[in-house]
Image (cartoon, rainbow, N blue to C red; front, side, top):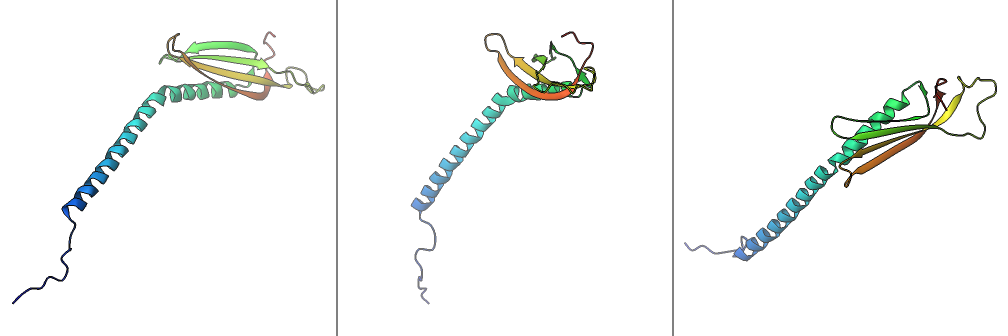
Amino acid sequence: MKRSVSNPARGFTLLEVLIAAVIMGTVFVACMGLLSQSLRNIERMKPHELALLHARDKMNEMLVREALRPDTTAGQWDDGYRWQAQVQVEPTSAGAPPALPPQVAPALVRIRVQISWGQDGASKTYAVETLQWTKVDPHAAN
């Protein structure tokens, strides 16, 4: 009995397999390059992210105070990040309601928190600020 060949091209040729392997290899190398660059960017941005977390924490610490007073304070965390917080009473056109004494009347205050890190030559800084209606400490010296 003789077998007849109905379809002589039943598989891929060696050339097609090689071209597919080259294309897949090129795509794999490109993807690994992008992944490597992304990991380097994440590592490079870690100090910036930590600075913003510190700034948010310091700002929240100041916002939860019952009364603020105009002053400038500074400090440093254990990880080397430095902060400076400044509180200023903003002038308002309407002023405080006349029926309320100044100790009770709310005032518009500007809170600015500046975070710095790095050496003096390569120091980096972030600053966040907000305006808040709050009581002003009556014992504060203006």
